Every structure is written in structure tokens, then in C-alpha cells.
Length: 619
Image 1 (spheres, rainbow, N blue to C red):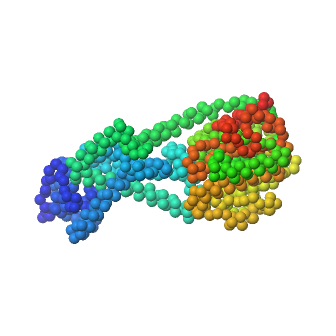
Image 2 (image 1 turned 30 degrees about the vertical axis):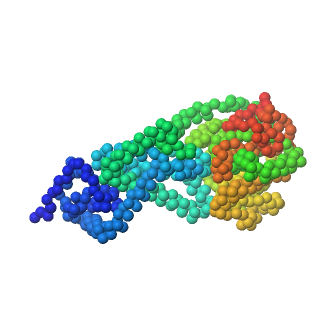
Image 3 (image 1 turned 30 degrees about the horizontal axis):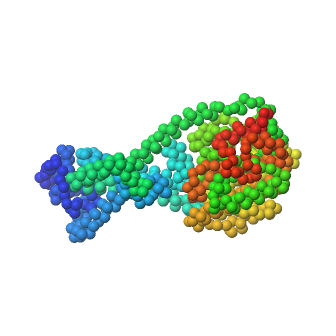
């Protein structure tokens, strides 16, 4: 015996229904089996494929549960019509606000202002028109796909915000994925394992929430437009006309244009970025094949430095802001003047200029490899290509001569570093091989003063040794600059245990980073500590054969630079032998440790060839 009710055939035309009669979720979904009354209140228009033939009773346990939930909800709504309507209206308003924010959200924090969210987005107007024009089934698919895509674009904007805050540039969809691992490592080393886990969980939850909420919001608004098609069509037409008018006349609120196609431009830039990233590998390969010194005989390389100990030292995050920013200039200037005076008293002279780093905020390894290779290493793809090639670096050329023992002091390295072999160093001392038994200072494994003393103990201070070329990377001025070490008597360094007490006296990074001015103050102090560690080492251990080249690798994060996107870093040559500095007299660098504002400024990739030319046979 059949239990089916007679079929009800619905017309193919769309019908408007009262919003109070629709499910407050308004998402177009219903349980598998519905009553005849529910079918008559269906909000979606039907085409021939949607025409109902029967309305079946629940056939499975799952359908039965959905049926009971539907009935319970309808019952509650019938008993509390006011609350149901308020809930429906509130959900719709929130959905609309979410979609508007997602469409108009800038991808940089400093651009977020009220005027940014009272614009007319071309993409929103076009999407509304398309959804109204589509048949029911394609429209539902389009609504879901559009919601997901809008969510992904919103997530990408959030990621961009983070990258601009740290690297002063947007996220690269092709080349930047490796930096995610670096970011999680930084969180662990700065805020501990718990902080890292909580941050990662928070990011994942936010990602999923954005995708789900934008999808539900677009579906809800689509259903609302369908139920009120004439009003929605007129509104879309009015907004489209207003957009064209405002775009033509250039109408603005302050400096913000009312008519915008920001998402189209945003996505267009990303597509172009991806294309450029894919093409860059071929461009870089051609650049790397050109080396002016590749065929120079070893006995003709770096002849002007034979018998000298040459130290190439990077000071982490030592950027131009530390010298030029009014809030830091006075204190930094005092440290540089003091260092210049003390070195001069010890018989050393110095010259300083500016280099432009390929990065800002982070990415030290890209700056180091640019300086040493003479190539512009601006992204991870280039770095990988470089370190798997036979391109000669400055350190390789020193080793090629056979006149120097080449060593690396890299306290920031605390795991396997296979790329280290590429730089041709005879021996590398990482954080585990400097003899340090003190605490980490947030990210920094070894304080700079101890690193320099370890270099003296392990290499420079040995008797009857051959000349040394050393690459030294000082890490105390690495973000987050809290807590930081301070200078102590060199005789008291011991095995580094003394730094346990010094760390306890330092600041807490979680407190410091609540106030940008505190961050800037701690940054300045960290730079001062690094400079003092280096200059005091030269004063204490340097001799007539010591040649020091030290520089910053990149500018600090925008929190410190206060939005300045410049990439200049100071570079200095210190030497006891006057002939060493005479060879670079035509460079026009400033006397002392502080470069003048108008001192020459080169790309960091130009230094290798200029240096090797100056200290070659014709220098």
C-alpha cells in the first residue's frame, strides 16, 4: 500500500515569500523529507529538473533526525515569532557586513580606515548581477564557490598584512611557503613551545572560520536577493550606475576613491607576481653565469690583502634607521663616535658607506648570499639556485688562493646547514660548537661578546697559525630584541654561565611588544651592544694585520622603521695598515664608523666585485 501523498507540481516561475516564513538560516537547504506546508514555503524557484513529484516520509534514521530537528525549529519559531524574526534579520545584517568587509578589506594594516569600508566594490556589483541572472541550480553552486573564493582572498589579505609588518612586502604565492616554517621556529624560540602551538592553532582556526563564514554569508545573501528579486535587481542597477559615475568623476572620501576595483587589481598583481616568479629562474641563471673573476689565476686574486686577517662581519638588523631616526640617532651616534675614537687610539682607521639590501625586516641569509656572491638574491628560489650552483663567492675566492684558512662563526645556526658547504669555508662553528653554556636570549643562542671571544679562543688567538678569513654573523640584534645582553669585562665571560643572571635582569618580550616605542628602544640598545662587542674586540685583540669589514644585513621590521621602506644598511672597513684603506680611497666613503647621509650608496650585490678589484693586482 502506497504511503505517498499526491504530487504537487510547482510553477516554473519564481515566487516571493515572506521572510518570516523562511528558515532564519536562509541557506536554501531543507531536510530530506518535508511536509506539504514546508514544500509550499520553499524559497528557491524551481526549473523543470527541480519539480517535485512526491513528498516522502522519513526513510532512514538520519532523515528522521533531520525531520525532528526541522519540526522542532518550526515549532520554536511559531511560538516566538518576534525572536525568530530578530534572529533572521541579525544574521542577515552580519552576513552582509562580513561580505562587505571581505570585499573592501585592504591588505595592509595602515590602510584600514573607516573610508575603506564605505566604497562601492565593482566585484560585488558584478557578482550580485550574475547570481540574479543564473538559474537556481547553477546559482547555488556559484554562491558556494564565490563564498569560498572570497574567503581565500580574505585569508591572503591577512597573510599580506603579516608580511608587510615583518618584511615590508606582500606574500609571494610561489616562493614564500618556506618562510612559514621559519615563522613557527621563531615563535617557539621567542615565546616557547606553548606559544608556538597556540599561535599555530589560532591561525588554523581563523583560516577555517573565514572560509566557512564567508561561504555561509554569500549563500544567505543570495537567497535573500532571490526572494526579493525586483528590489535586488533595482539595487544592483543603482549601485552599478553609481560605481560608473564615481569612477568617471573620480569621487573620493578624503584620499579614498568611492568606486573601487581593488580585488581585481589585487588578484591581477598576484597573477603577475606568480608569472614573474616562474620566469625569474631563467633570468637568474643567465646572471649567475657572468663572473668577471672566474678565469683569474689564484695567485692574482686578493693580492692586496695577503698576510692579513680579514673578517666579514654581519650585524643582524643593523639598518639605516638606527643612525638616521631622530629617536635613536643621538645614542647611536654617541656609540659610533666612541668606537671610532677608541679604535683610532689603538691605531685603526675606518671608512663607511651605504649598501642597499635585497630584503628588509627578515631574510638575513638572502642578504648574506647577495653580499658574498655578487648576485641579487631577493627570494628563496634564487637562494636555492645559488647554493646548488658553482658560482664563486667572496669566501670561495679567499679559499681558492690557498693563502687563508677560511672559517665561519654562525651562532644563529642550531641545526644542520647543508648550504654552508657552498660558501667554501674550511670550518664552521655553529651555536653548539662555541663553548657557550649560558641561556638563549629569546631567538639569540649566543651573545655577541661571547661569539667574538670564542672566535679569539678557537681561531684568531692561536699561535703560529696561517692568516684567517672569517665570516662572522652577530645575532644579538635579532628580533625580538628582548631580553638583550650587555657588555661585561672580557675576563668574566668564562663559559657563558654569567649570562643567566644578565638574562634575568633583561626585559620580557611579551611586555615589550605591547608598546612600539619600547620595541624601538630595545632595538637601539641591541644594535649598540653588537657594535660595542665588535669594536672592543678589535681594540683588544686586533693588530697591524687585522682588516674588519662589518655591515648590517637588512633594516629591522616596520614596527621599528615606523613605515620607512628603505633598505639601506651601513657598511664599514676598519684597518690598522694605512695601505689597506688607501686602496679604497676612490670609493668616497666617510671617515669613521658612521657613514655620512650623502655617502655613496651601492646595491649589496656590487660589493664583491668592487672589493676584489680594489684588492687585486690592479687595485
